[in-house]
Length: 160
Image 1 (cartoon, rainbow, N blue to C red):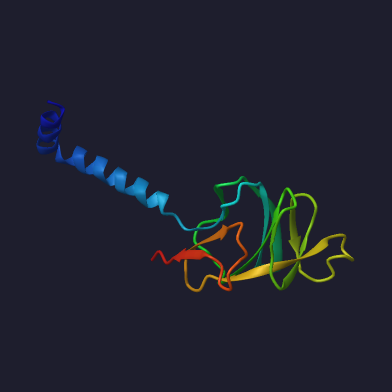
Image 2 (tube, rainbow, N blue to C red):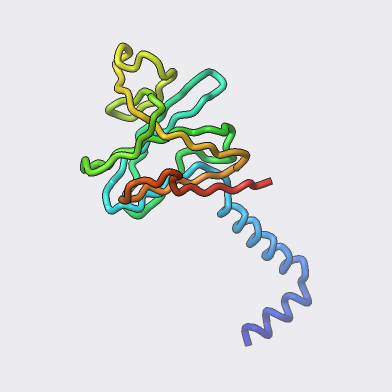
């Protein structure tokens, strides 16, 4: 009975049906939005910092706290840079995801301009891993318990 009523409504009110269909498509498009996400596949809380080159120079930001088996968006919207840098620490001291690119971090929430003279400016220095996002508008980094492979697990999408 419900299916029959739906068929009649669709044939009598095509604009209503098309509007509902269009709203559904917009909702699905919103779900596929572009951003830079980090997923924590471990069981522990992880603190994450990101670095990038802005118009005004190098910037590092942190900390995003990502619970085990969950994800967080660090940068919303299409990516404006090709290279992003990531550093993460297991809150229980069990692990670290780092790399060879030194940038500044702080104990508490931070946004730091510049990557030089970290100690002289009252910050710590950490090694960040570089991620080349190419021309992708979206990127995801997966933090795992295993030793990182030579090419870490990342995904990207190029949304026109």
